[in-house]
Length: 433
Image 1: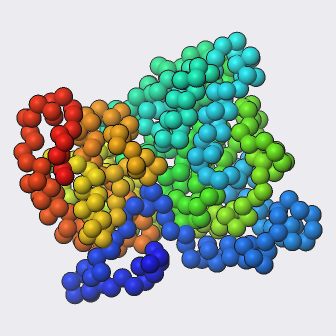
Image 2 (image 1 turned 180 degrees about the horizontal axis):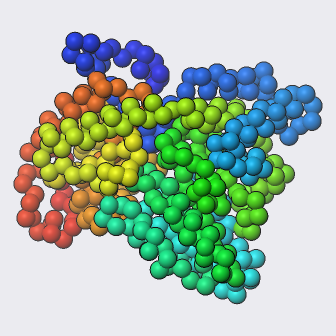
Image 3 (image 1 turned 180 degrees about the vertical axis):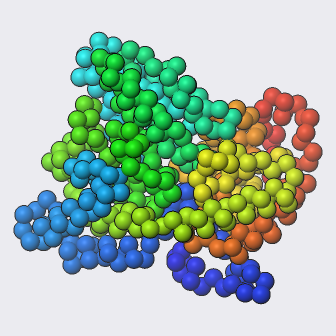
């Protein structure tokens, strides 16, 4: 059954205000379903207008025109020039392009007379974090991982302390994918504008805005960024379509994709015309979603308040504000997060234990560890992420089911407080199982 079929067939009992088929999707931070109106815009470019956008015949030019129109929609959203919008496969590609492009550039290293130095926050998405780690491990760049406070926010002073004469790039995500905390991107951008006026080697600024696009202004000028990455499937567009904003004059790094001359020579490869068209349609819709965002935040507050009222020792990970309107990340003492996830899934409720890109890893979240949580606490955490189709009845369904699940799992795992394994931050073998 598709997501839309499931939502369409879902029965709401108006008297009880409950979801009778008990299927609830609360993993919008992992992906959003493609909006039906977006899919309808994409449909012709799979078949009727299936030409290559680089071809000069009429089929190709029809596709090229659609790409141009989508590029303008993205440029309007980012308040930038169309030539600064580079289409790609998604934010993982865009983030790797920037991080590795700066870290592995011999041209930059030669100009500096030293290895490039990158500053990356400790709570970046895995694709930024792993790319920076890779550069560090192979010895091609210096990397400083800027710490966060207990609320999961990077403070400007930590960035300032990390700057060196050979610093060439700072990468700070706009909003965290696991805990939803909003980072001071505009503040860092304003500070960089001041100090770059006094430096011989400019420090460039990148932000991963994947989670922010749905909910926060993404004006590249106001944010003060040189590079910004987006993925269409995070705002009801298609998977496999993304954007890398490259400010004019900031293209000093090595490009990632070689081949054809597409995307102003920055990203070779045949255009994913249906995906690009869908991304453009989805991003245009974000201009008028304030009422939707307000309702999502109301439901988020209902979920947070309800969990804290009904369940003892339930702790919100990360600051309640500033936080994305759709994000709720809780840790439950004495229960393993995977056990909560599987139990909720059996009840028809979909959540996650963190980033979807790291869902198969048994390692504790690097984001939660960076905040100062112990491995046990990190393993006791789960993420609920709301979206456009979330209803009040669904939130009430979660609040009905979750307390019973937590109580059952705590009874199974027993009284873990005071155990030696917990004092060492290790996981008991039967923890939450």
